[in-house]
Image 1 (cartoon, each protein chain N blue to C red):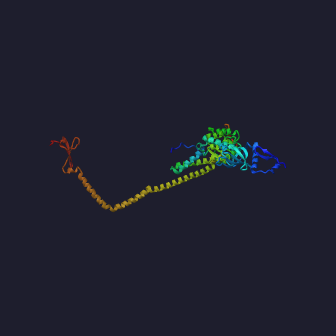
Image 2: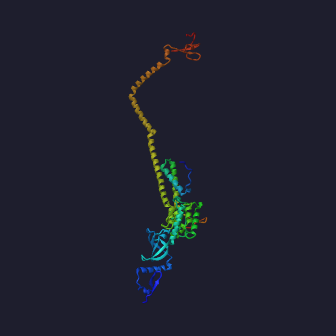
Image 3: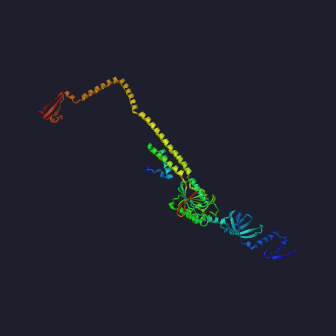
Length: 78
Length: 423
């Protein structure tokens, strides 16, 4: 498996990307033999990803916009 | 009492003058009375050409081809019959309970003593007409392939952007937004309001669907919805223009119109049908944030566990290595070798003397053998080694002997000159 280019900063990842990378890391830690250094690095990245996902889930607020003609306006929702 | 009889031309009988007070005294037969009654019906022009509204019941279609039924409403019943010649022209499928409008004449069936509606046309009444139109359109659009299952596309299970087409008044939009907020607040909603009934509903619905199909909006799914109502209220969603717009939408559409049992042609054309607007919002969000939170917790746990396992394995490996080290360490080697040496020494000393004697005699023998092979030993027996003085080359043959030579005997050497060579 070719090594991907240096990983994107965790803060820029959307939920699907962060969660998917987290799954890959857990799978790798469980099934592949890696050096202590590599494993620790992966674990740390994994923790950062967990934090990012939790944040996205926690802070989520449905955004609602209304389309009239070609105008998109925010809808005030009570 | 005066008894006046007049000849009734149609009935060809003599009848008393129509005076109520005289009836009681007339002696009828069943036939004469029935004939009289029949005459009453037939002489009433308005009963010859009637349209009657009612509900079909007791429908019977015997092998003769005639259709018998009772047309009724809340207050009365009217026995009816349609002869097979008219029945053959009927393009309506009759059912008990159907609301219809029937054309025919009312007359008396003498033998049965019944007045009846003799029907020559039957039409669906009011709402029934809409239903017929629904069936006609359904057949037409189905044959155009708009409802084919192969046209239906999968709905993304984690949509980022959800479009909604519905009225901006009414409960539907609020219910849908609440449902989406509860299930998938990470999504974004783009709402394109439109009237959902009335004359201008179909073109506005078409426009709303088209506007949400704008590629720049990047919608993952569109929810087309309307709360419950009668077939007339929902009619816009059976409008051919709307149905074609639903079928032609580039973005997948979930249609949730009316109640559980309401089906509109837009439902058939959509990629997915929902029984209600709220259900449409639910179907659009099979993955929910509460569900994701659970997944994340579980995965986070796996992450921790994998590290714990890894560290345990490392500790185990280190422990094994330590054991290995101890086994192969130089200290241990030295200790081991020392013991080996002691062991050897002990064994050596035991057989030492004997061995030595044996070795010595062997050596002796070898030494004598070696001596015998020493080339210089032959000199003792009188042989000499002759070499040329000029270059030291050994003289083996007579012809090599010339000039000055050096002669080596057992105890030294001397130089000589060759005088004469023998052959």
